[in-house]
Image 1 (cartoon, rainbow, N blue to C red):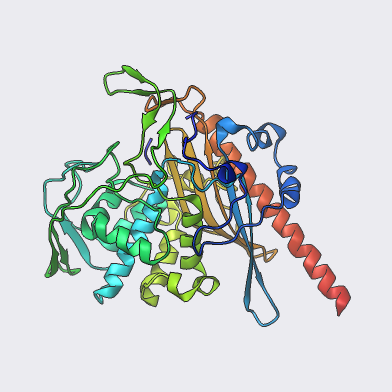
Image 2 (cartoon, one colour; image 1 turned 90 degrees about the vertical axis):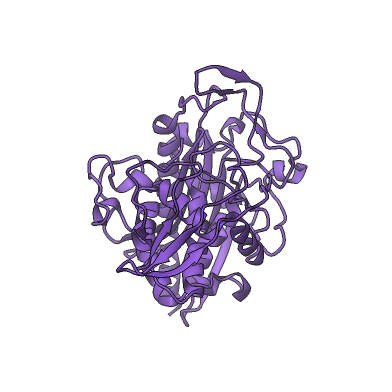
Length: 410
């Protein structure tokens, strides 16, 4: 995963209030703070204090999932601190739409995750070490993305799809403000060109080719994305003043939330907003998106460094213990420039609790970007883990109350 204080001048008053009418056909999140007080009371006070501290720029989205007597899906949506026009680094959460658009492209071509992608060398920019294989099976690429959030697989898919095609598809799905325009490992635009390459069968036979592509960089949709008090250059010098992130990747938190909901529970969204992924590929992708590092055989990850919570911040991200039995998570985390984010579908077998939670927090106390001095371990990860536990405990209690009420009614 890749490793502000100023807000955007273009931010609307409604966004600053954290209670915003949905853009276009996005989820309508309720603005009632009453249920959140109950959730936040379950968190350690020092971490709960981060929520209303403007330097932490906390945004939280929650979709509760209910199934009625006919097993039909009912969803309710709440938010706290949601500011749709506020910039934050897309981080590795960008890999979620990248992976899903790539799965769509394979479905469109009638291919599966067993094929290989082989971009033509050399890499133009971004993370791509000399040890990276020329070709890789797509399923392996996806496992690297979701189990430990490696950056190189994102860059492989970036060349396969191309930012213009990514942008067109995200607009079609109702995400016009999303910007997946850069490889990971570069601070700004890649120069307007992608690599050509080939799609190979599992045995290495060529199935298709894709061309190099020219593209136009798309900027942050709400004006200049100026943030922070300074930027540390590679030589250690600090360039003072807000840094311009306008031409970097950006995906609004509500878009990430909706993208995951549409993948996990397509029946919960409008047909026009469902991912066009063949069902066998979708089923395999969901297994990969839920996979823990210790469950991954190829590649194999060392359990000491890549513990269960390494790329799952909610609930158990602050512990090296294994994920609790009967608890299922599907989603994607991100970490960059002092920001941490997570968007996860959570299901608890014992209680029947089922929800989708997304949140982002800034932990960059000195306001300097690119200096690697961030409070990830001290504040960020403990905050997201505690928030996840608090929501889970609250949802478990709600499920118990609902069962008790149903029992009395019978």
